[in-house]
Each structure stands twice: as C-alpha cells, then as structure tokens.
Length: 223
Image (cartoon, rainbow, N blue to C red):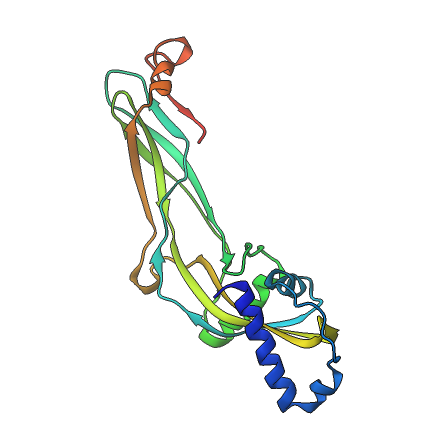
C-alpha cells in the first residue's frame, strides 16, 4: 500500500469515526487542511506531539536477510594459500515501509516495543549488533572476507495518532505500516549465518601485488 493510499485510508476511517462519534464531528472544521504525509505523522509520534499507538501488530514469519560483508578484505599476493584470523562486526537496524529507519532509543521504538510486548509477550528490538572473529583462508591471487546474514522479521500494524487539538483538520490519523528488523537467532527455526567468501582479484587489485610494500604479501584493506 502506497503512502497516498495509506493516508486516504486514514481519511476515510476518520470520516466514518466522525459520523459514529458526533463529539469528534462537532470539533472537525468544515474545510479540512491539506493531508499530511505518513512521514509527518510518524515524526509527530516520535516527538510526542501526537499521542500514538501501534495497533494490532502482526508478526510475519522470520527469514534470513541478504548476506553482507562485515570484515575487511584479505588480499593474498603470495604463491601459497594464506590464513589469517579476522575480526568482524555487524549492526542491523530496522526500517519502515512508509520510509525511514527506526532510531534506537527513540519514541517510535518504544511504542512498537510496548505494543508487541503486550500482544505477544515478546521483547522487540530495533537494532542488533554482533562481533566475533573468524579464520579466513585465501588462495593465491584472491581476495577473501567474512559475510553475515541476519535473521529478519516483519511486523505489520496501524499507527493511530491523537492530537489534543485538530491537526490537518482532524483529531485522529491512521497510517498502516510494516516494520522490518532483526529477530532473535532461532526465531521460526531460522539462524543467522556467518561464512567466508572469496573471489579472484580484479586487474587493479593485481597491480597491488606487482610492487611496493604489498608485493608478495598477505594484507588487509577496509571495505
């Protein structure tokens, strides 16, 4: 569902609510202001200007996210396979379907956590960090690195925002949203994966082995 559709849905819901609850209808001005974007609604949730809740959260099935490089690159400019212990670190955050990321320690994170905990007795976290080390073995003329894939999960729900005074013509706004973020290892039988990957050097990388301080050496460089 696009942002425009989400906001139109919110407007229709408000119209129905206003009809059922005449107290709200009496307070809505005849000429409503321009509709806000979903980002503006969530910004008010984050700042506390709007009194927000994340209603009816639905947990999706866990899945393994896309693998990504989490270490430096290990170059082998020698004639023999080379092994070296390498440290790695990986931080995976959360994002909204309506746009933007979930700030650790922010108001949005707290609202989602409270909603999911109350519904599922499950403590949701918007970010997860892991660090460790791994032995990387690289063939001559190749580059190696450590890759990691995080267990991920989606949570779908609807933001309900209430203002003390009408904003954009209404007291309430509703925005459907899906939050994608890290899940604990083992969720739904899925486990994060850490693997060593390698490839042949490019033409430019082979030049590093032709001379200078890296000739006939095993060395690392940042990503």
